[in-house]
Image 1 (cartoon, rainbow, N blue to C red):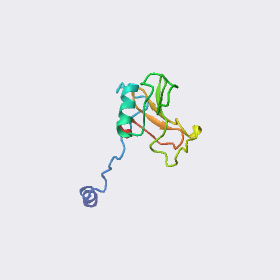
Image 2: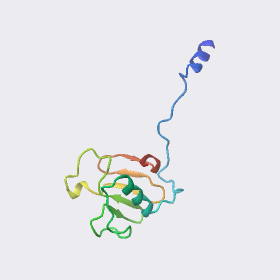
Image 3: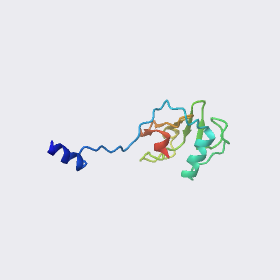
Image 4: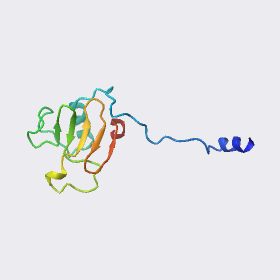
Length: 116
């Protein structure tokens, strides 16, 4: 018993949380396309939004907006450059409402809190 108490006192049994799990089904944030694109532009100034947050395919925008996601032209997490190839672009999806994201190119994923 003394050995157990010593280990507990020495913090050998304390687990630290490094990442908080937030379900991709979480819609409580009610994030709009405007909020998502504004935040991403503020953090990644090279991104632009020439389509004024409304259409999904017009203009030379860094974003596409669908009924369920904001799709980002260049994933900031991808280690390889897109080299201007269309097949490498528009792979980062950010879910409307909850903000869960997933890149179909590099596989990075997480919640809105992870992205921020």
